[in-house]
Amino acid sequence: GEAVARETMLPGAVLTRVARSHIRVGTFQFFAARGDAEAIRMLADHVIARHYPEAAEAGRPHAALLDAVLEAQARLVAQWILIGFIHGVMNTDNTSVAGETIDFGPCAFMDLYHPHKVYSSIDHMGRYAFGRQPGIMQWNLAQLAQCLLPVMGDDQDAAVAEAQSLIDGFPSRFETAL
Image (cartoon, rainbow, N blue to C red; front, side, top):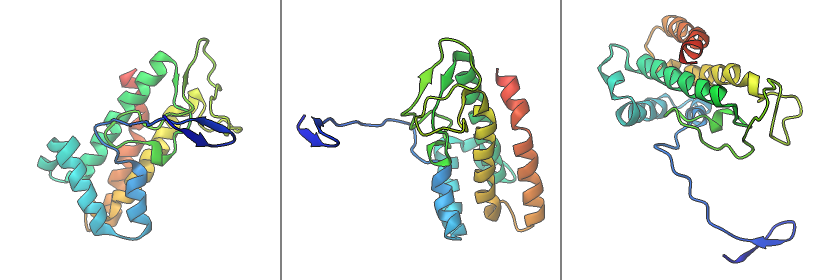
């Protein structure tokens, strides 16, 4: 490729990212921050149709979507732990609702077990350390749950209770997936 101006002139390249979906928790947060419940509903319905069609048959499809994403992510993070993978920057915009690993630039595999190991040069506090990945994923999914609340039913107290129950179940799902 052609040279690209960075700190110095460097060789350029094209990187193509491939995934079943590039919809992330952060995508839902964008619409939630704008208070756009209709956009959240449309996005959630698209994710259901594309990735979790069984949720469409549930009595509460948006709660079923949250449940399915929780299950997929619990299995994914368990796989990371089993092979010593450190994602590096597990923010909500790097958390796919399809249950796939995306945007893992500062990632690495550990040669020796160290639960506090980080690979991101900006993670000075160890937020995304190897051993913290399950808890961070649970936090990210709590953010998804918060975004979905407006479309989980008219009774918001019931929606909050249901979402909280699902989020609270993440650790046991993760442990089962190990």
